[in-house]
Length: 396
Length: 118
Image (cartoon, rainbow over all chains, first blue to last red; front, side, top):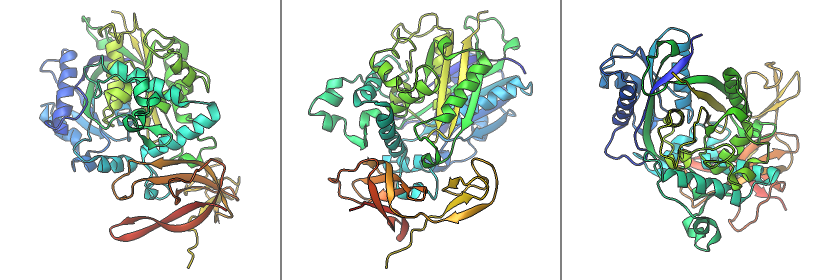
């Protein structure tokens, strides 16, 4: 198996992009990654596109075929990869396996979603289609609803408090103000969303015990990477980033069938596999991009990947241990909470953010000094299909 | 007339693991033969949420969704039909019934409905 390196990364600003089609966004992000890799007019062997809902949001299918045509990458192989909100992570996996096996030499991986084209009412329904079609969906359950039920259990079992959830929201939205690609570039104050009497209006309950600012926004956006075999990488000003580890695991479709619904087994297993492959331990990781679609998930995932013991993640967030300069900085991009969550783009965007960090090219407000290793967790469904990557800077 | 609860769970004939919804192979021992089991008795609330941002297809101001465990161990999701002012707690006993949980294309869709017992 060959070592696989990321040689190009690109992203477009996330948010509401009424002026762009889904294909525009995928093309813009792809061109940024191709240019970043210095590929010029060269082609690639294959393209993998992570996307969850173009069939439902845009009434469009076969988007990978459309993208290679748009980018004049013909006759490159092209596949769309759908794995709910972990579509991006699964697309990166497909690229990794194709290069590692030796079948292809250069691959473009892009993830994208255009969700703001439909009303919030409709977008919530589209995302809810990943719940069980007989046992869950008919009741009107939503992903915020699943997260609300999970949060209630987590609070009762581990003593997580509203203040801990708010600490995550404050950190990630503050980081979003330093990220030009973030959907939400607005810092919050604890007073404004929790302590003040006006917080009832500013930060209403969306799925109790979760409030508006516990949830990520619904976003449009796209992100892309170019990968190749490490032994083919030419010396350049930008160091390659090795995909040192990958893991993926699944869990029961419904939350109710898990012996302990607070145990995110797929997160634990995916992260363990990725760390084992990279021959690293959680303590060797310098920063992480975790799937904080809801603030509780950043806390729970920080425990399940092994950064903190169960029940300690919320306290760590409150104590600033997950901030820049802390024990393990998490979601310095702003995470899904501030960067936004165009579902198919997120897994790729997490990788792009870690690449920027490991190449040491971010402003000091976001850059982890001398960062060498990073971890991503892309959480599909409600934890029933999870991908994780460990990335490592390669000195040339 | 009161409708029978339309949930059927599946008990593995080899290891006894209860499944709902259906799986083709047992989640524990992978065996493929199951005994059909109807949920029995009252239901204990395991967790719940009040959802205020509803998906397409619902025209109410909020929905309350809960996950319960019946006396014979069957676990299922259901809609909680109570006034917003009623305080719900995990562990409380709920009275299960089978009723309308949504209306789709003019047709009633039936499912598990829960109300606080007593």
